[in-house]
Image (tube, rainbow, N blue to C red; front, side, top):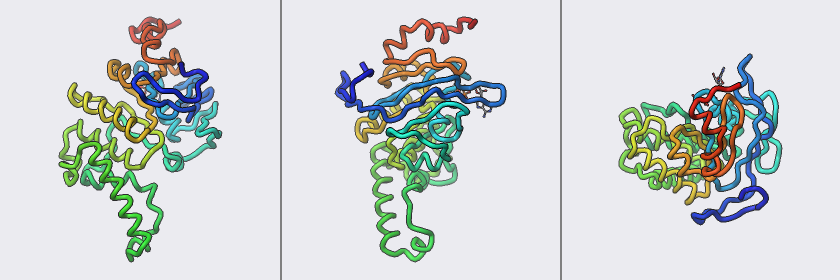
Length: 272
Ligand SMILES: Nc1ncnc2c1ncn2[C@@H]1O[C@H](COP(=O)(O)OP(=O)(O)OP(=O)(O)O)[C@@H](O)[C@H]1O
């Protein structure tokens, strides 16, 4: 289905475009531990791409390679048709890649609004001096940034808590604020590290709906890691399956679900 076509429309009416990111033969080692072994896969514009696998499979490591936090010893990362040189995470962010973290990384003492505003930092170009004396450009920039943030806050239905310090929020809402902050950066590619971890069923349903809405409304391409298999199969267009650092499956959910190597990995069948 995904092999040759430049772009196509899925059964649910969404347009999946051409390849946006390609991971080519990525190998990442930590001393003697090989976290990722020679893995290749691509991400297409507009799709929701999941990376799954048992604990320690290398999923977070892969997300960290995409976000520029880890640099693989071997392999290449291609983004928008060009090989990406080794970059720092903030440089990767400037290319339109935003992320959320497995363990929420918000400023607990700050309000929801201020936390979401920090998502705009990469878009703030005017210097401290111009901001301090508040002339034209800085004012325009501030107004623009506020407008984007307000739109995201509306979209994710967190208006009622915009003034609340994050430390007072329940877990599910914190996760939503983290999504809001990532979205405020106006990313082309959004990386979600276990967006439903620790959530109850209702919170998971809400988060699933928001992820689908973000993809639909903003056309944001999404790569997510998630342990809840039901959620992954419902949300994703394609799934990469990792086990012990290797890729053991890659394809649409139905195909992956019936892949014997994947079934064995999840049932804990012994490896040679
Ligand atoms: N910073 C690091 N230093 C040393 N080893 C690491 C580091 N990060 C990950 N590893 C190792 O790399 C392997 C893959 O870890 P990783 O966290 O990527 O897996 P994961 O699939 O995300 O696991 P989980 O589902 O438990 O979060 C593991 O053996 C882990 O111990």
